[in-house]
Length: 335
Ligand code: AHR
Image 1 (tube, rainbow, N blue to C red):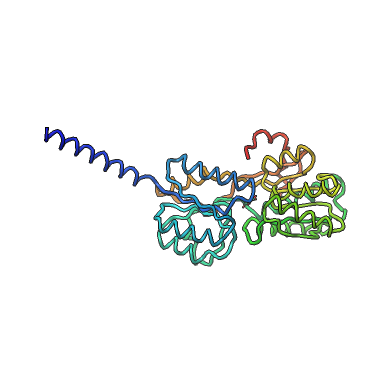
Image 2: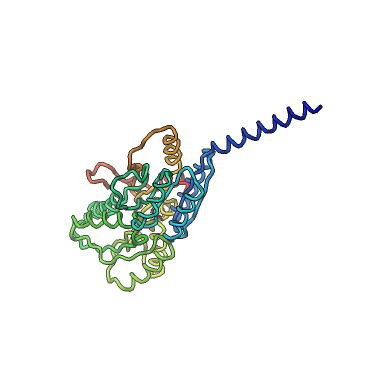
């Protein structure tokens, strides 16, 4: 009997050790997200979290609530917890050198998504790879669409006043889109940015800023909003002012979310430049590859399109890519 009990105890011990070894084998992936300012961000958060958990890994998630200091704290907590990988999107471009040096020192591979942090490191060994939108190109696409749209109406030589709703000041998406737009629009001097203010990528601020721009700017022909939620907020302000969005004021947004497609189909918005939030499968591909000893290109941008109501407007520098019709894609858009 004693012998039997000893054998059973040994068996339990072996099973328990096996389970511990299995648990230790499961990767722990930490994800530092910036907050939940837009529909794009919600889709991005869900996609990345689901992909990490779907891969069978432990997820440690932190929402920084739009504060850089919270992201710094989160990164330090991830180091203390000894996570295996850190997935990181930087709320603003600057101010990361100290904490990212600590991540590197801890030997935790850093996977960058969405917004790229600018650092002063001597080489690029501090991160594994970056996956996210080409923000200057997105801004340039918006500018090209506006000019080509006016040209398509035979109105390309008119004086066109553009107002801009900027994203969060200092965010990669704001800095890049503003730069790309300004450089491109400067090629057509009769198209001018006459006012530019931040709406922090939110619908509520887009609406409030547009309300005040409608009072302070005498003639607004075009609104370029650096994301769709701000464009949608601005549409409410334009309607409240007794104007017809999409007709009295041409409206161009960015992200290509479902609500923007619906606004284009209704004729209240004219164009949206795509920036995809779907980054989860790339995160899984990268971490799986790194585990197998692979390396990745340092910067990878997803393939993205531009959508409007009629299709056929050129939006790339070579004039080759033409807009797709939002109404053909609205039903398949899940975010
Ligand atoms: O960094 C991507 C941008 O951030 C998206 O355009 C915007 O909607 C989001 O909040």
